[in-house]
Figure 1: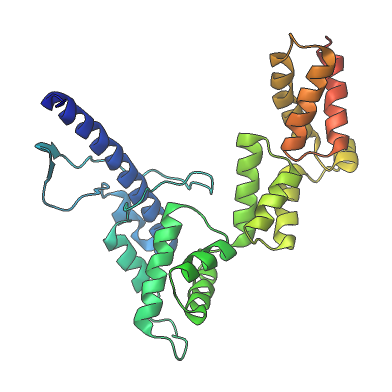
Figure 2: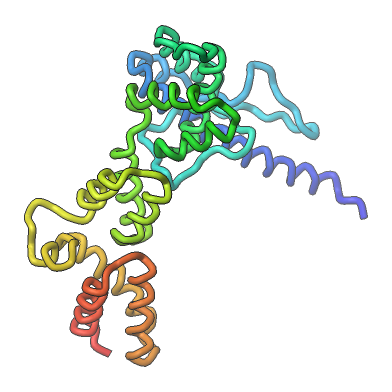
Length: 282
């Protein structure tokens, strides 16, 4: 059965609108990356509206897509918010400026300068989508069939410019998972180890997120500061109250599973359950 032309055009319009949003997000991410590389370009970039299209108009199914004029948003998105979809490459002008920043750098003997530049471009395209740990970016570049020496050269260059920093990455990842998903130290550490973050950076990141300088009783006994325990109790209370119609034993088992799945110790789990039963008696 043939679909009405109006229905086809409407579906096409929705598809193009979604593609436009993904392109705009990718461009915004690449612009933020460029500002890290070339801070002196900020006045120029801030005054220029993002445009994911070339100068000529594009047509699809008889519908003209006008390039939206959207200003670049400030801020940085952590690892959890991947932006660009397949084929949504960052702005080529931004990438070229980023690559030109490193043209004067020393080239490792035996490696073609053009190959290194191509690897840098691939790395910038990856970082424009989301943050990576050093190990993750290394695996991605090796998966694109660059030699080990080429990948090592790019990694060293990006680390020297501050584009790769496992310490900052680990802390940002830890804080994001704690605040948005209530992950505990154990689960966050496991995830960071899987991403190849060094153990020292993992421990430092979780301490900075879950502990403070006061060293209160909760921190001494459970490894979580008083503020962290209060935040966890508030989130656990929501789960406890949702099961108000269940028998007490089932409510306890439900909270135990919820806390253990998120990576909290048995000491934290028992403390939270006792506090829940005291403040929200069955």
